[in-house]
Structure formats: C-alpha cells, structure tokens
Image (cartoon, rainbow, N blue to C red; front, side, top):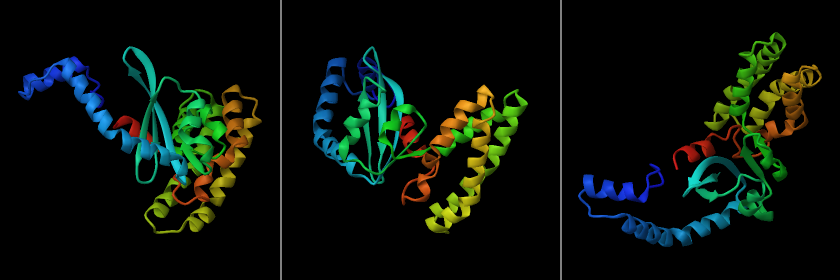
Length: 236
C-alpha cells in the first residue's frame, strides 16, 4: 500500500486475484494495524535517537494521507533512516524531529525552513542544477556568471570522491578545495553586486551563508550533497 501507493481495496484485490490469498479491504486494514503495532517500539526507539546523531541528511516530499495533502520527512543517519509523515512542511516540524538536543550538522537543500537549525550543509548537487539553469538562460551576463561558477563547482566533486573512498584525508580535501572555495566566493560576490535581478538574490543568499556550502570540510561523515535523503524519499 505504501510503496506502490495502492488503496486497501486494490491491495486486497491483488492478494486475492494474483496470489490466491483470500483478502478484503477490512482485512488489509487489520493487517496494517497489526504490523504498525509490531513495529512501533522499534520505530519510537530509532526516532528518539535522531537528535543524538552527529549529522543527518534531511529531505521532504509531498505525499497524501487519505484525501489530504501531507509531507514525508526523511531523516538519514549513518546506520538507520527514520520516516515521518506530517501535515506540514513548516520549520516547526524540525523541532519535533530534532528537539533541542541536536547540535551538529543537517545536510539539506536550501529551503528556508531548515535555516533555523543554524548548522547546515547545503547540497552541492542542487546548487549545480541551479548553476546549469543560469548557463542555459538567455541573458549573456547570467550565463557568463553561471559558467564562471560552474568551473570551481566541478572541482568540489573530484577530490571529494577521493576523500570518500579513503584515498585522501579530510584535511587534504580542505587544502585542495581552498582555491575553489575562494573562487566561488569571488563569483558570488560579483553576482550579488551585479544589479541583475536574476543574479542578485541567489548570489547574495549563497554568499551571506557561504559557510553552509563548506561544512563538509570540517565535519567527518558530512557529505556535500543530500543525495542519501533524497533517495530515501524516492525509495520509501
């Protein structure tokens, strides 16, 4: 029902028609409740451990609860993933998930509901897509800045793959990426002061919070993308 987004009635029809297992909608609901009750203690125990993790990848995607719109929040720790369905995408939900005990880094996209956490790693994969959109635009000034920003952005991923597989240390990674870090800062500052409405807001936001682009250099286990949490949302 969850993974394939099927109703209780269709689930029962599948079991009976294709698998030869007699079932009906009410029985599907009963089995769902039985599984929920069996898993609840383990789920609650893992949810309680979320705020104690040294870092988390968090993402959210739209879903439905009955006829109402809802949001599936995915919290990816190193050894486990916790899903939470809530009726809102507001930042207050993060207080519920993280509580006041969480004090390290959240890897996420640049959605503003994450900003109150204050300890973020913004996703470079998202940023690279935004830069590609600049390059593909029809404004020459915007496209040029996009190309100038894409060059150091590519340099982020090459040494990171070596750090991830253990070929270089995180200290090596930080040293190798220092030129790219300075180059990104210069280009963002140029865009923020360009006067071009297509560039000013984006570049100012990134420049003002540029530390959130580079948290992965200083925190073991933190990655420069939130791909893990996005994959969790897709494959739930």
